[in-house]
Length: 273
Image (cartoon, rainbow, N blue to C red; front, top):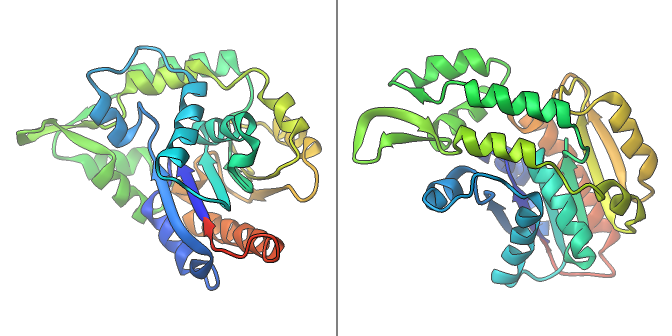
């Protein structure tokens, strides 16, 4: 099995997953990507990034990544938040691209007022720091797993001046691009497409999410049919990979093993994730 994951997957989630007994032998290759305006991709593309974002473009990028790396079936796609929404749309655009998908707190709903407010808040947020990064982020992300916070501090920021490491720090994902992503929103027909889909889609929600209401979560739960599943992480919010990496890895491992068992006779080779 090959697994393609997008957005917000720190190394600890992957490490926990591969350390789970029975998982590593089923995984042939793991590909993790940043959207064009996120993380390392944003750094590479900073001179050419448009001011507006388009989620379908990110979905097409996911499918092009599969093609570029000549990824062979069986493939499982995994995405969180915006990445979950983009992954979901990619799976609707090309249903045979994945034997299954796993969405963690995916953004599937049109939430104009909420996203506009979040975008405004993001644009007002501080995005430059001196050398006191650790103390600044420990206050802001006090509910994050400490190891995940360490990964973020190592991989999520970049020097203001790449030739001067004492120049201070800023985020790899510019706040203007983060805000543009919120405003772009998912494909308006994604829920209808999801309801019509015959593929395996697995949803993982946070019980205390600020982004996905219980009402919207229950709506998705009523839409999916066996062998698709929905699960809720107790005590978790929207940022499950950051706050509950071990719990999330355990759930993903369970889904992978169940999927592998279901495809043993149909697809004997290892999965690609």
